[in-house]
Image 1 (cartoon, helix red, strand yellow):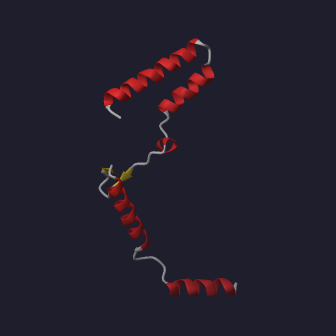
Image 2 (cartoon, rainbow, N blue to C red):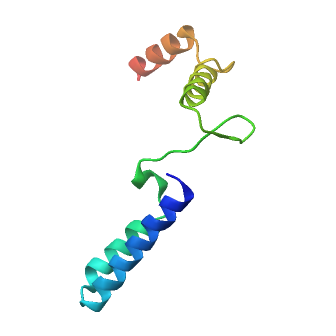
Image 3 (cartoon, rainbow, N blue to C red):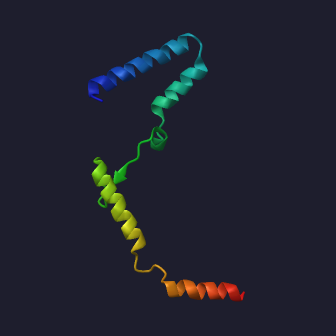
Length: 96
């Protein structure tokens, strides 16, 4: 959405909210204001993905690569348990 279109969209919403106030529909007015000003990004279906340096990724391909790297790093930690660790732990729990 271009800046001009976004500004016009916001102006239209503000006019609609003012009409709600004039008509005494305060409950609907507050709901519309909350929809416009809600700071919870996830409620709008938008998620920010950052690279390792904290830069915002805007390309879908860049986001996919970042998630792939994140998952690989998550599962390739040096201190992750080995299968031997799990077998020992399972035998211990069976003994108690």
